[in-house]
Length: 113
Length: 117
Image (cartoon, rainbow over all chains, first blue to last red; front, top):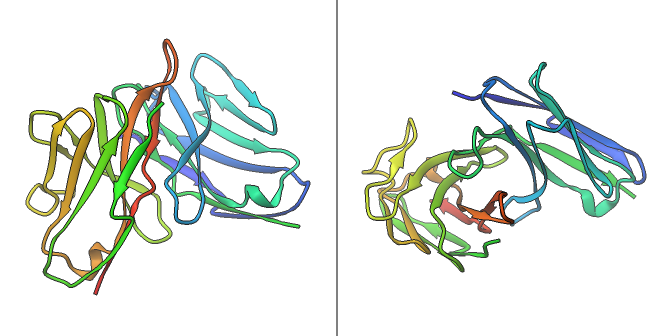
């Protein structure tokens, strides 16, 4: 089955800096790669996703890149703010509509003012 | 999109007892899942809740321990049976719903934080 590795497990940055979280996956059939943000006491919430037919996607301060050859994808957050502090999970799936998600272990991001 | 209401949000239970968690969705969805998130850990899929048939369990999870019901396309329950302290976790309901003409997205409930003493 699919295996998703995520690094780093914790990341501390100063407000305004950029943060990068990286994930690798094992199953070349995976074609959907979402990123979730989980705040304390809440369920994960989708912040951005990318499908295998594109290499990069951007939404304001958040961007995701995908390298299918190397089987890795990354989350980039620019101009970080304290409210970005949360646990971020990457995931992979073969078909987001009908197959399950395999999650990475998560990255705790702490943005200091 | 989909809005998920999960109950209870938290509970403290005695070992040996059972707890049933409810998941209500504001729209009909085909795919509904139950995940476990142990303290400080990632999400692990317990099972896929199938409407009108038995749930599909992942390796390491069995129906006797985690019975699941899915009576219709908007509701499901997960029961954690004969609980032990090792069952202390956050249990999350998830659904897949359309967000556009061709796109789908997984939505999560806020979770049930279970502590077994």
